[in-house]
Image 1 (cartoon, one colour):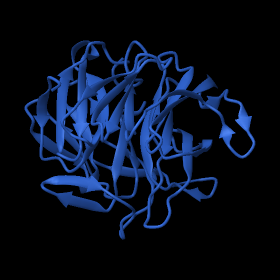
Image 2 (tube, rainbow, N blue to C red):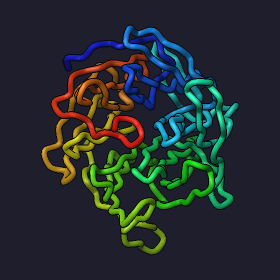
Image 3 (spheres, one colour):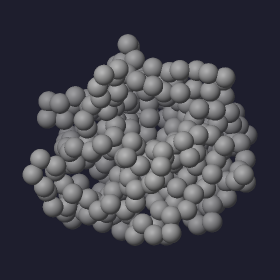
Length: 308
């Protein structure tokens, strides 16, 4: 078993970890509808309670936390473990929220793009210019599910564009160290895609009729493995949280020599880097409600507006 330490437990389906410079780690608790600060001693402080289903999160250029809120899941609990299912009866709509982590004030920044409602925003990453990319994973219902894509937006709420459509359950998102490629992980296909960028918010991918921008397939996992959120390390490897085969799948940019770091939760959902020299990996074990940490063999990629 992987050598890790439990930072805290008792979380209600944690996701979206952010390792703050002061040693605290922000996590969302999807099943509780809240943003929580986890202290190094394992104690927890509620930062804000936006409701719905807060999911991916990132610190923005204004020092506030930008949260992808998926609007909530129907949660199934068995043997003390939580499992997110389909769209709940009290689904509150997808949106991008901005949260002041000092006061807990919650602002809704985006709910639509070109008149089309956001369905289930999932993961987010800021570029060096202060704009952000995010995925919309959509929602599943008993007989159908949403067709969604990937968006680019400005942090001041003035602009949002649908950059990639369609995509099959887009989830994790990240930027290469040079910010010349955008990585998108699709959950149900177990595929990781790379899209070349020509500038901030600008795809250089060729477009195909009816299919939109075409990316480069970095890797597609065999068997029943689902991709969740991701982080990029300083060497450019894409570290993707993996469900069913619970753990972190480490994918080099060229897709060769893929490796897997196992974790004791089949629903391992996210990873971020923090600590001295960014060599501590913080990983969310969501069904069992734990945030764990482990030493990582390489430093993580410094995130814009957080680690630099």
